[in-house]
Structures are given as structure tokens and as C-alpha cells.
Length: 286
Image (cartoon, rainbow, N blue to C red; front, side, top):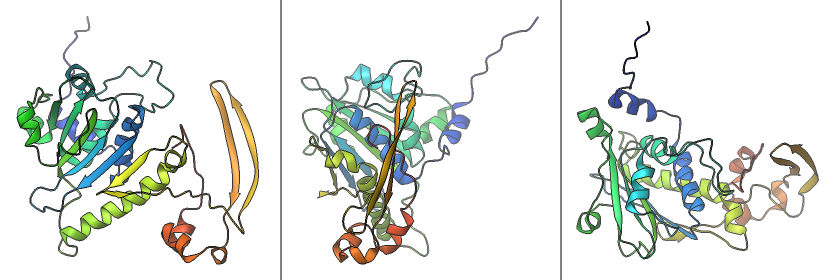
């Protein structure tokens, strides 16, 4: 007779697999922002520190926020049943995006949240502690004093509702013999800002626009489908499917001679314009 035995994977081994899921920094940030959009945020504020001893990276939103019970459920891996129906703005499927995106970039994930009219709550995952204890122990029930002392958290920025994701022990924020710590952060933030401006440009341009700020600088949308003299729209084709339609648009970019220097600079230069040519697949406007 077959005998059932416990096949639970070792947390300290599995966490190393999750850290290598395949995100780069920009993709990981975009996955976090997707959750903010699903929570009906109107403003997303991103901050990075320049401390080489303990660099931090924080993403604030003013969305619905979470109660402590909801935070506990969302701190779990695979927090959602993939067979359940989702809101049209929710791209999540397995309930692991916030955790896997964060683990790919940082060894400590802190989540602080507040629903309107309720008290602030906080929790964190620390990969060093997972590896040490070899158990899935999420640290919950942080009190307000503990929350206010967390590096990367500013209660003056945090609104009366919303969520902030904070990364500590960031793997890519490490100085090399050839690049200074300040340059690494500056280059990372510059690349991320441009990625956000393209990836979420439809949200920035909508009538009910979503505002993005990086270190207090407001981002402007970058539409890869450059309009104006020399550009051409070559029609639209609709493909019908069982659960919706796919709309295909063909667009020819204008030659750089038709663009002003300001437009070229905004798009990242001539090389970036050529590099960004290709297929853009939009789902729920991103």
C-alpha cells in the first residue's frame, strides 16, 4: 500500500528559488504598482535612499489599504485562489506577485497599511530569518512606535489610508569596484522612472489620471506610439475571443527629423526611440 509522507519543501531552499523567479528591478516595481492600481490608488510616491550602509526603497500609495487581518492574508505566498473571478483592474492571479517581486530584489520586505478609519498595521518577511529558522514565519502586529522607527517609512508622506512597500537589504544596490554606490542608485532610478512612464502611460493620460512621483519629482507619460508629422496609423483589426476581443493597431513612427529635440530627449534619445520599436501588448491599460 502506498504510504503518504510529508512533502513540504524546505522554506530556506524554496525561498532561494523564489528569489530567482526572473524579475529585473523595473519589472518588480511595476508588479508592486499593479497592486496599487488594483487598490484604486490615485497617487503613487516612490523614494530611494542614498545611504550605502542600509539603502531602502519605498513605494507609497493612497489606495484602499488593509486591515491587520487582510495584511496577514496578503503576506502569505499564493494568497489568492487562481480560479476566483478578479476585478477588471486586477492583474493578479496567484496572490504571490508582491512577495516574489520583492524577494527578487531585496532580502527584507516590509508592508505597512491602513484602512480609512482603522489603525495602522505592519508586517515583514526577512529572508535571513527564514533561512535561519527554516520556517515560514512572517513577523506581524508591529505597533505604531515600531512602524514609525522603520527606515524608509515617513509618517508625513503616509496618508490616512493606503499601503507602503519597503525594501531593505537590496541586492542590486551594491557598490562595485567600477561604479560608485550613488551612480548605481541614480542609474537604477532613472531607468525605473522611464519604464514607469512608458508602462503606465495610459493611466497618466486618462481623464481620471494616476499620479506618479519619484523622489518628489512628478513623472510624465511617455507614449511609445509617437504622434505628429511623419507618423502613420495603418488601421485597426479586431480578433474576437470567448472572453473578450483583441484589438490590433499598426503605427509607423515619424522619422527623427520630424521630432523636436525636446521630444527626442523626453523619449530617451534617438537610440531609445529605435530600441523601443516593436510589439506592445496592453492588458488592462498596461
